[in-house]
Length: 472
Image (cartoon, rainbow, N blue to C red; front, side, top):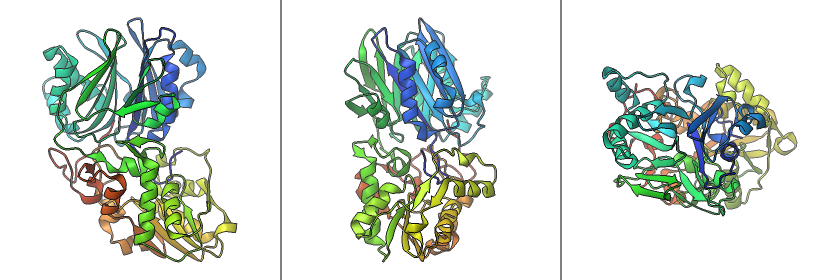
């Protein structure tokens, strides 16, 4: 389950192709999406190919709420793709759920993706002016339309993808399937979002936003889908692919390593949990303090806290217990309601906290209001001092590549110095990791997107401050 911090990723995608005629692809995708549930809890969908038809089922809510055994049993087929969604714009209505079915001249396709198209509004306006119509607010419909136009022109997926990539500005890991059961995957030329592919011992091929879902399927070996690459799995040729665009600049999302991806996921060869523990160690060195216990904000603060405790020598304790049966508090319409939801989610262990100096470790600060409520919970439990340490540097700018960061005016670090943020959250001291710490911990200096930390966007055109943040 996700940390309480009110930042969310856009979505997660998972797909499977099996050469085995008795394979139940719908169940495989169901299991994969459950492993990716942290990437989106708004709605979900699965599409299965069977005898030339695409069978799509979707619904609002968690994967386990939407898909029961009876529904999955009806979804026969050996190829399938699926999606979990958290929308950063557009409504949470079912019409914006994925996969999306799109008819081309030669075949029907089901599309799904993870990412954010920064020039979505510009492209959509151009297509409307040319007479095209849209049924939803989903970026996936826009991308499907671009593919429809490009495929009618080129007749093959590789040249069509190259043309589509030339029009898009932003992040996208794209997974789609045709009515023949062929499965395709591609990743934007800058490699913003994680995307992996692998096969199991039976020759089944899997695609996923994160490697943790492939682990759950028993996949022993996998690799990243290369930026600018198109992959295809078919009955005729098996697994094959082509590099259609050579990357000029790699900009992997820093925040995937620090927060969004599950700790057991491997991105670009880096285990996310290791990255977070290293950053916790850096925090202990750059922001030391005398305290009795290091306490994480569950769940995503845990790895940072373990690193801090190890480097500082201060004992680690689970001083905040989380109610795992309360979901999706970020949908609360008012801040007061969200803060009450935080208090119902976390219960302090007074025997650990009372009378003690606490180092409270969290992954990030966005607005600051949620962490302020948590600091108050710790103080009400009798803490003598509360020293807050944050695993991510200050977030000073919104994201246009797929993360639900709010506007400049809502970001605490965009409007306050660190001392101002400390007062805002009510901590005795406050320390953040540094940009150089992030580069060192991940080990991909010069290949990371840090736009939310430095306000420098690796896009063809820098968005204006009033640019709407859209998402899949």
